Length: 375
Image (cartoon, rainbow, N blue to C red; front, side, top):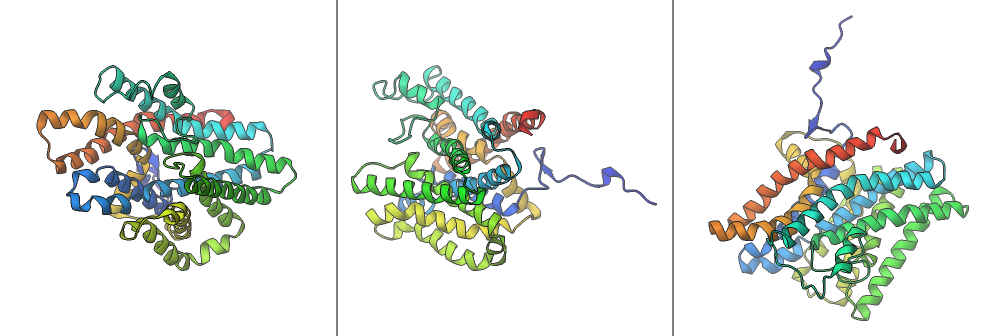
């Protein structure tokens, strides 16, 4: 009997990451999200007549990340609560896994930004009266934008605060309802309904009373719950999820474009109130289709998958660190044109993110596999 040489089977990897179990459609969403954020954060380098349209038409990036995170974490939570004993170790195991994935790079970038700002003076220092020791310390525990406007430092980190509070609170809600005698299915659905209801009403109350909701945790937690709803449907009503992807995709795309191109219409109280909800529902409706795209091939597949893999590093490195701390000095020395600034934001950040993924993110992800408690 002829045996195959193991070397003949080339492992499908990028940057050392095994792509066997990755879902290409979700990588497409993640790559689109980070690229749209890049464009949104560099719109001022383009001709002024395009600024308004570019700002509004590229604002779907963060909601995509939110719904996608909710979907992926929802699947993990449902599987964990099904398979593991209902005790404190279950929660601690989940939290530790998430923290080892997200916190090391976040704290390294945070320390780097403080060093660049207060030691190297590469970026303007925030007003000390508005950004004292208490405000600086809040970045250690993600309290810089819990129910108030974010502080003038590391601006893009507001989304990390939303996600970290989501990681903390969602399993606690599910755990609580399970302890109250609810089934897992009832606990997940009750948590979804409760958080969406609370988040939507907080947003409505604050908008009606002219209180800011911009870049805050509490008014945005419900966006991630639409991703959890997707995980719930995928688990408990799988036929709904798998049999009609194209039917869901069309209205989802319409809602996605309607909110994304709201710059065409007059932006008013109602549109601001429901934009997050409508956009999240639109993304949710499109997700079954993208979830069905398991793999791909060719240079576009490799680029989008590559971008998806390093998207977390791209997000944390491109704005406060490179655009506002490094790029102004490069521009002053070399007299960069606006188009060169755009190119540098993309090229340099991709290079830095590749190194970050290889030497920070992946080592910590690999470490999780070696810790017996986390398996």
